[in-house]
Amino acid sequence: MEIFERIERVAAIGDRLGYSPAEDRAHELAAGWMAEAGLEISRDEVGNLFGRRGSARVWTGSHLDSVPNGGRFDGVLGVLAGIEAAARLPDAELAVAAFRAEENGPMGSRRLVSLPEAFVEVHIEQGPVLERAGEPLGVVTAIAGQARGAVVFEGRADHAGTTPMDAREDALVEAARFVLRVRESTREGGVATVGAVEVEPNAMNVVPARVAVAVDARAPTAEELEALIARIGFEPTWRLAPVAMSGAPFVALSAVLPDAPRLVSGAGHDAMVLAAAGVPTAMLFVRSLNGGASHSPEELTSNDDIALAVDALTRTLERLAA
Ligand SMILES: [Zn+2]
Image 1 (cartoon, rainbow, N blue to C red):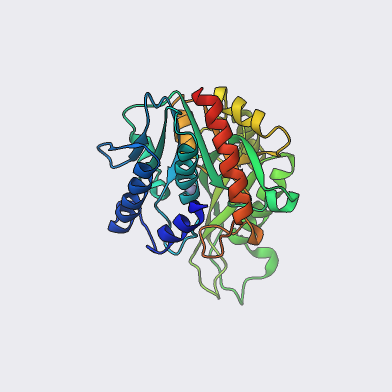
Image 2 (cartoon, protein in one colour):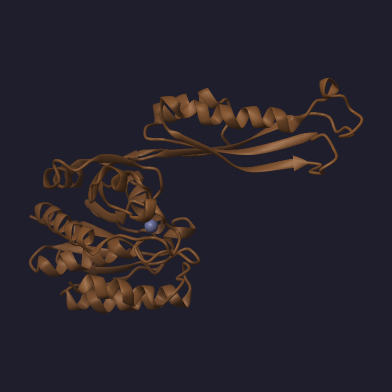
């Protein structure tokens, strides 16, 4: 299948940061392949690329930009699978989209001026769930909501040699207890991470006086996210609402893959932006090998799984465009 060779052609460009000349080159390659598939090329004012046929009320696609030193499948697979499916459905009125700069925002999909009636995105899972389950494909039911904030612990700076252990107010010890509580709080659902810690004065021989920890909490529904925030006990300063996959695209994809595992996406995607804008949206996850490695050159998805994903996408679009 041409898609395997095309994945290598895009990967050969190297890092493709959003709005860089390298991302432009990937868009030019994709535009050529869209034209070969019988699609009419257009670009909007923020540089999103579309290959359209007919009324094109149904869209599929993803992004072609990458993180520095990223993998060859993240985003690219969704665009190229869409082009392949469009070539197999020469009469279907649909569009394949390559959104700009997903990794820095996303930026392109947030600035769409017109929206489709349905959107389907194929994407690698970027996690180990399908590999662990021994399943090539999964149907995404929701994209997790996110809440972020900082928690500050105040103690007192003291001499590390002369202050008795029972006379200390060590802010880092309190913060360490909190980090464990964050992990415990996910037993009833969701995921939560303390990924950044600032210690003051951050000196080996001084009892820590002040510690700020950054919390990232995610859950599939608004209710579950609020419950998780309450269990952790922090005040988010930034939130992103969860979105459910829904409507005709979700029904069509579910009918094509009745036995595939259902899973929640813990990462945001262009599909999240379109769904949040009110577009009925579905998302198909393809198994990531190497323990789900992603945003790294270790990212791997097999040709067999890609072939299954293209088949499933084609059948889903066929139903939707009918
Ligand atoms: Zn991606």
